[in-house]
Amino acid sequence: MTILAVDTTSEFGSLAIRSQQRTLAEIALHSPEGFGHVLFQAIEDILREAALRLEEIDCFAAASGPGSFTGVRIGLAAVKGLAAATGKAAAGVSILQALASVGDLPLRATVLDARRGEVYAAVYDSDLRPVEPETVAPLAAWLGTLSAPLYQFISPAALALQATRFRDMPFVQGPKQLAAAVALCAEREPLQDPAELDANYVRRSDAELFWKES
Image (cartoon, rainbow, N blue to C red):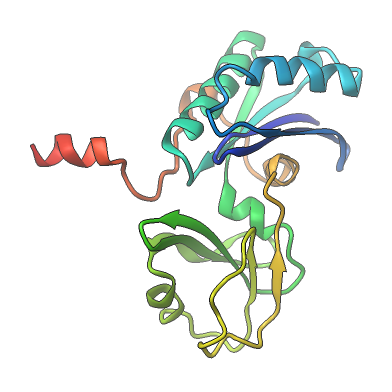
C-alpha cells in the first residue's frame, strides 16, 4: 500500500510518501502563517520526488490533531478532498500516536505543548495502542496520574521533569515534522471512508466554547 501523509497540526508541517514499509519521500514545511497557500504545491512536489502520480496513491492520511485548530482543518480537508476525488481510502492519525512511533520502550508517554500552561499527552504501548487516553492538562497534574514504574517520554521539546519522580526516566526528543510517522501509523489503522474523517482536537476551540456557553 502506498500512503501519502500530511501533517499540518503545527507551524512545522510535513508531507511523506510511504510504500512497502519504507519512506519514499519526505518534505518539511515551516509555515507560521498557515498551510493553505503552500500545501497543494508541496503535494505536487513530493509526488514528483517519489516519481508517482496521484492515482497511484492508495491511501491519503492526515494528522487529525491535536494541534492548531486551523492547521488540523486544512490537513484534513486536503486529504478528504484528494481521497474523494480519486476514489481512494483515507486515514486520520493522532499526532500523539505518531510521536509514540519514535520510541522503542513498552510504555511511551508522548507530550506536546498545548499552550495556556497545558500539554497534550497520552501513553501508548509498543504496538502504538493507547494505554492512557489522550488528554489536555497541566504537565504536573498529568504526571500525577501516571503509576507505572517506567515510561519513555517523547516530546519535540524539553520537558520539566527534573523536580519529579520521572527525572531519571528515558527521554527522546521527537522530530517536529511527523508526516512519515503519520504514514507509518496509517499502515496499522483500518482505512476509512473520507467522509468519516474527523478532527481530534482533545479540547474545543475558544469559538466553540463561546457559542455553547452563549
